[in-house]
Amino acid sequence: MKIDRNKLNTLLRSGLNPEIKTRKHLAAHLSLDPTSLTRWFASRDRLGNPRYPVVPDRHVTKILQLFTLDPDSLNLNDENFTNIVLKNNCYRAITTMI
Image (cartoon, rainbow, N blue to C red; front, top):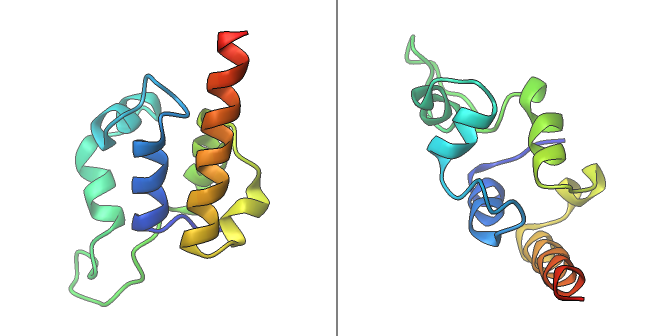
């Protein structure tokens, strides 16, 4: 399970969790320093070695719980992932209106 930059941006823009709209809000909910989120998506580590920019595994489950997502949705490509997130958001909006 990997959350790359595009998937995280999709989650933040989706409105699935109205309290979390920016990376700074996400960092606060995860009890992290906001600069650590910036480091997650750096193309190189502190020593200059190349790295693949993704969210560390230890935080993926917490993020999935915050946005009430199924872990299997992370295996989808970006377009399908966006569709799933938008469907979940529409479903959440409809259920709160009823």
